[in-house]
Length: 319
Image 1 (tube, rainbow, N blue to C red):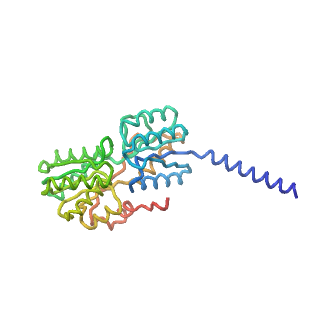
Image 2: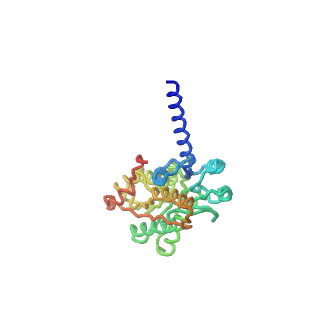
């Protein structure tokens, strides 16, 4: 009996040892977003987790609570480098602050995929993002179409130093100046990645410019805050508003006519491809240096299209 118990114990110990060895061979990829407070990042996380499941890698998700917490993002990146994970995917909250830690990771042989928002460096594996400049141009053309190519408009921008949203805002401005000389931006303020601050900024602009005809917001929190300000003043449908990114509230406001057009990214795909490209590198392949993820301009009549439904409402709980 004692020998049987001993043999059973040894068998269990061997099984545990084999499981441990098997687990230790699984590659670990850290995915570090700008923040965790918005649906966009939840969709990125779902895509990253889906890729981890498909390719058999351990995905560690960790980012600051807010997109303005630059120091916290650097701390998280440093901790992943110290842990010597097998790969890192990161959305840079500030284009200059992350240059040195990304260079350090690369020098240690850790491949780094940059997604969503870039850095002032080329020392990374691949950059996977919306072509934000073109997306900003698309937003300008949508607003121009809605206003007949003329009118006074305002912008609620995101935060200073965020490359992705700065590119959108630059693309918007350039398209207006080159293609629509009769449209004029009369005010612009930052929402600081905060819905309540964006709402206050939009209300200030609406107070200062009572005859405003159009508005553009360059990110989800700015879009939500601007939409709230428009609704609070009973201006839904009276001001043509082109918003950027998506949430259930923004979709509802598009249905209600408060938002005239919604420029939508594909964050799920962004997260999936970030992990996939690191896996390819670990397998000895070299992914393209730049991978563009398309955007879509969605109007109310598009909401019933199956491909738009899937884009706007990914099954986050599944992942």
